Length: 184
View (cartoon, rainbow, N blue to C red):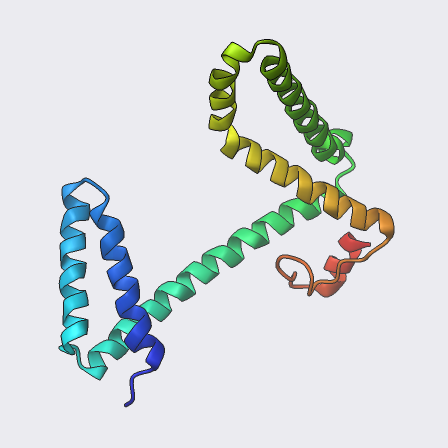
């Protein structure tokens, strides 16, 4: 049985990269795993693994990928279901939650940027400290502004009358008529 080229080249590279990454983690467990992976990488280099053993490794990798794919599908399914429930809700708060979130994010971001500009222009001696503080908030702002950007983009599509088909959604629903009901 011929061993696929991807398995011959990809798996050893993946193992070597993982071993190098684990070397940076300063714990006995990570160091031990790094050493073990280095040994496995060396075995790949010397050709000590038979095609059958490589096939077994490939089978395990495929199973791990299948599990990860299923987890992602389930997460997308849950997200889509919660959005469908939100859209179908008659509760004014549930329907207005995303716009409210958008306004709050936009206002707080604007307030922070105006405060930063004020400090840079009028209190220059504190600018470095304030910029460093704002920089530490970068990740949370990236998440909030990304959510806001996606909401604005999708809402713009809704206003233009563009219909999202089940093929364009994050995860197709089981029933296409249900999906069309929520997209119209």
